[in-house]
Length: 189
Length: 426
Image (cartoon, rainbow over all chains, first blue to last red):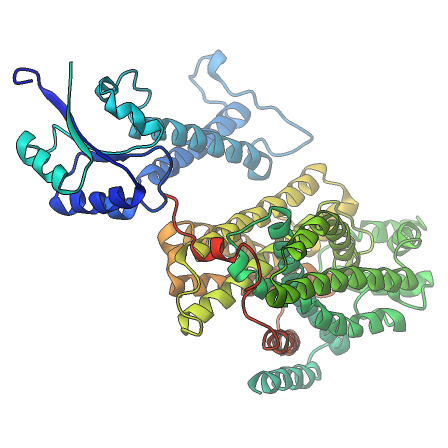
């Protein structure tokens, strides 16, 4: 264990109350790169963990605005525009439909709306995956046999080794003092 | 009570002012119609909320459901407030609906409709047929629309329909209020099952009755005009009004610490989200209606929009267009960006502002539907404001009367704890 770099330290807890309390202590102790793992959602765990609100809404907003602008450009260019000097394959079509103006917002709003929604939705999905670092094909935590019970009946606090406050002995003592039923170092191959 | 005083002041102001404006009785009755459609939309929106909660077996909303049930039962008082409208139709004075005039000879109805068409020295699309008359064609506008609408738009059919509509709405309101209040005492789970069982049928009844009601009450103002989506348009306003009223009650109770710490922030945010969704829904439906009429460009359907200032073509514009633009901005863009944020939804003070804002703008939405029919130019006076104050005060008074005679919360509901312990999921 001395020459292999530790990836994280995991502490096992046996019920929700214990892990919520422990999460508060880890937050107050000043750890930054850590997480709580549990078999089911713990509603409101964001408060004891001190999680900041996600920036995902902003990603959605930006994508929505980009979608709107792309849609506007699309309908304007394709339907309404002839630009001198641009080669013919890239010119707009200038469809005249039932005497309507070539470029008029009422007819184009559905397209703007759909593209806004499409870009916002795809941006939200990809943004969520990106923020969660997914897809992740392998996580060193899976090397721990103890950790497997996280999908059944145990709760874990994982403090990553790249946390500025991480010191193997100190962190181990700290996690033990929180009432963890077991503390273990997971190594990174 | 203060509300009685306000109601009287409103009524008196409306009466006095109506002496000074043209077509005073018409202005008065149409202003009254706007106010009536406004309070009706609050009750129908509340009915919608109650029905959907039972339809979805919702637990989160139990703590606020009673307020909606009260507003929904308050449809009793809108039944009373409907009487002047019914009287106008029964009387055949044509003050509200041109089709209801008792002297339905062609010349009389024609004259009336001519005056309904904008006269700001422009020719609207509707009066095209009137021009044809001078060219020798004898198919006048008045004749055409009456021949089309006679089997449907007549006085007895209108009154019978509204009797049935109020029977449905009052029936549903009383049923859901009584079951819920009975449950306060007994805590009987079977009452919840009963309400849920009926909610499906009730929702279907609600949809049909609201659509028919919107057609009769607002769309028939222009007897020649039709829009199949109009019922949904009125419904979207109803949902906004119902949810806004509910949220206003919750926020005021919270703000003035009348029932402290009952409503979690999460319930407030959830209501805000629903309201937000229906603000968008209103714009979506309003635009859908506009775009189809715009695209089809049929003279008999665009006339309604021309009357309301929605045309930009030379000679067809009028000052109602400013109200139309105002609605687009104030009923959609401003509130949409205004309370999109979660932090705004959690802030009681700011949300009170938005909720009151939406209620006011919703009134002007209905105003824009009704008043341009007989006023060629943008206008507002104490006639409309006075009647609105009068009707809304009576409505609030009745709601207060009902609310003080029952628990403020559905304490017997088996899901009340789920609602009380609700917190953020993320």
